[in-house]
Length: 113
Length: 108
Image (cartoon, rainbow over all chains, first blue to last red; front, side, top):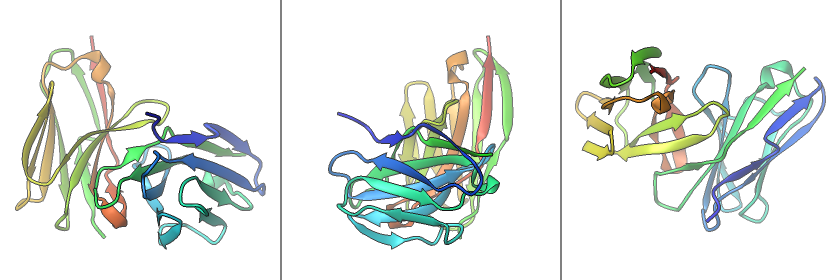
């Protein structure tokens, strides 16, 4: 069975550009999480979906960050007007309902120049 | 918010050595996770535990709920164990709170 996939794996954006990062969770996984990992740091929580509902977006660092999961499967994290401090690896993870174990995708490494 | 501290931040050891990585957290938890991250970003879950001890191959994870402390041990370490090991707590709807990771290098 396929794991969590993310695309693109690498993205270089010029400051001010908009970017969209995609996450395909494991089929049947209700819960989906986005994390941001700066260089040399542990990941930090951005947002959480249960099916199509975004139940927690407290970790999104600014209103330039927007996430959606319209049909309860694929999710997109959008960053508008990218800044250099947005450079990081963006990780997606999914899990079954009522479980704590999360399955991680390979991440998207975003570099803003 | 839970604070997760790992030590050491960096560890270099010789092949065959017994490795210990420590993790402490500030607030009671439902679950603690040990994760492995190789260069390139991919994260693999090694253990999820809420009490006691778990063993998988050469890896052993223990947790002391009263002391809010967990350890990850690697026996007979091998160069392929070289990676970043991350402790994380929580899960469910709250997401995970991560430590900064321990960068382990095992030299042949």
